[in-house]
Image (cartoon, rainbow, N blue to C red; front, top):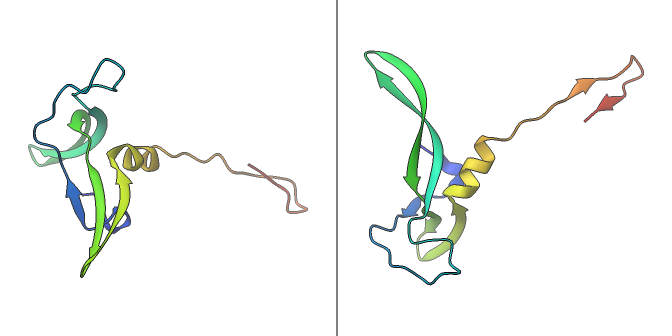
Length: 92
């Protein structure tokens, strides 16, 4: 679902514990856009999903590739690029 950009494996916590009052919380839920097929049509909706960590595993080498928060940030990127005048100026 996330493609190859974010690793090959996920570490999804199934059970967590309260980590103190200064922690982000023991329910680490993220709001994520998902595309589902309903009655033969693809519909886009938002769901709350447990955060997870992504890893890339190559033989015995394991490298961390971010979390669900990084994926959501990547998916929500937007760029406003407008072409400038005829001299080739661009506005970002």
